[in-house]
Amino acid sequence: MTMTTMYEKIKDLAAQNRVAKTKEEKERINKSMLQLQEENPEEYAMALEKLIKETSQHIEDLSVAEQMGEVTKIVSMSYIAKEYFGKSRSWLFQRLNGNTVNGKPATFTPDELHTLKNALSDIAKRIGSISAVL
Image 1 (tube, rainbow, N blue to C red):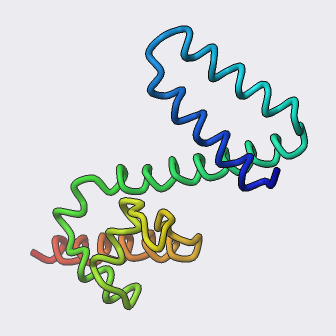
Image 2: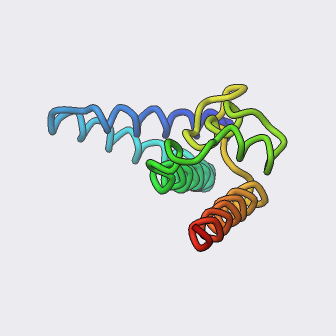
């Protein structure tokens, strides 16, 4: 069994568990998870760690979109994408929303996230300086 196969089995069982409605379904899924763990504890641990990291990254990416909230309506995302990233508005929204691109969720790299923070800070300063002189 390869790590990918173990990973896919764990991911599939986790998805089944989220939609399971009965105690019997949950017990069957739990039994299957334990069986996978017993088959190859090391591979199971590696696959589970990969899934946890992906889930953690997904949660972090969702937090970016949630934190942006109404800012995406107030500030021009097209401007930010073009001026700060040299990219299109759709590129920025793909990362904000974690859209699937080329078969995997689009995310910000740490450098891109830093650029986004700097862009928002820069725009806030510009708006603040304008409001101060009005």
